[in-house]
Length: 142
Length: 436
Image (cartoon, rainbow over all chains, first blue to last red; front, side, top):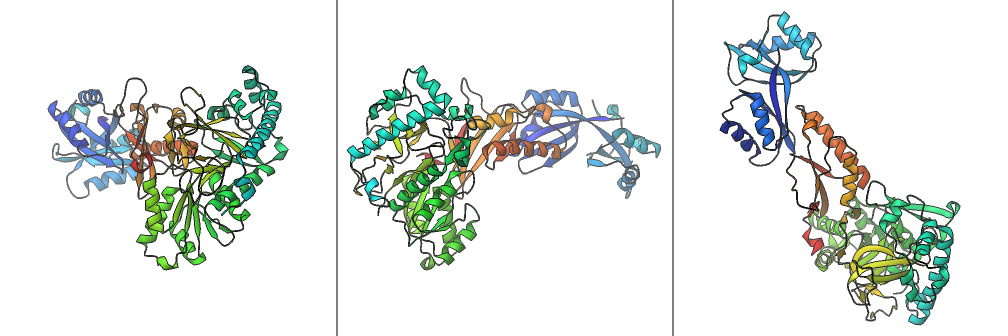
């Protein structure tokens, strides 16, 4: 029901993002979805990768502060209103979105969005009941 | 111009006799009233009767800032609490400040010495003095204020900050002298220039600057920008506040220490041995009239030397050279004393924050900015920005509460603060103008 997201602390300086992504690239880890929340002084990078455990071990061994978080991968119709309908469901159920970002690729003709919500179990139930598909970890990567 | 000519020009023999009598009285009083001093003296096998000449000062134990911390808040007070009419506070080396207590007589002495300092700067009844030192627990504001009133000048208690209002009042009230930190003076000077004030309407002639070290280069710049004579004032909360020593307009070199109230010694910072006049070392001060909190042989950790030559102004009180640096790791940031150990004490209390930090001090637009870099521990990382920002705010608040100074907190990746064998580097001071 949940998939793993890797979050990492990135200092706000020239080249820091490049170093991080290069590290993954050299290890053959693919970035499937990516978002960066930035402040004046630092950024928090969140990504879904082809192999999260490997990515975590790798970046930690290179001195990054990083951790894994459970998030929802929500497949919505790739057409106008696809996301809005899913959000309506959650709002009616009183679920708050902490943040969301979208997948780079489509999967089975659907647009995939990563949701981080305050009540993940409830959100999953609401979405599944209404026929919205949640992607499993195996469908995305390790 | 003298405020108190008979005392300021007192013949050395008489002055030294006065010092001896006052020293003996002070030693008797602290021996009787302050258990810490009594115990220290007993450990050294010294009793008040052993102080027969001024040289016997060297028999007495030293007082360190840590003694003030260990006996916080009132342990070194020598007068009954009912006689204490004011307290001030300054930075300690850890979480707690150090507290100084003043009797009514102490406040009179303080005003008297500040009045003499103003005399050194030729500030008197005709003057309007803007006191742009912070008012409050810090001794700068109130210390200067009562001296200004004592000489009969007009005090304008603007306190520090709000530079635009400072300039407006300076112009409208016809301010003739200003007292503040030298870095704030520079800032005021640049604002005057940049905001296009009509310099012909600015009546400023004199500046009295202290609470942080400054160089001759800074003096030139301030004098040029503000069109004034800039003079150095010295003092510290542990001995009274500003007014312990002051440069005179005539000498414009070296600060007269008011020796009828404070006895200076210059020590070898490593051995504690007293050095002869003229040699560079650590300034050590004994207060000889303080009642609330006298300090015996207080180690200031300020480096200077005594200028043995007489001053052209005619004052007989010895001069110390403009401060040359510190023997410890104390920083002075916007007039506030900061010890790296204070930052350590503040962040130690926060779960998950490693006591590894770096202080970076910079001068941006003539304002000291303190950046504190702290490593973010893995368990504190959240995928939510607001949680990390909250953490950052909590850490900076903890540090600011201890320092009494705003800081810019920077979270950095673990391991990015340089480790070194033995003592790690805690401070990067980029303010070259101050350290030259």
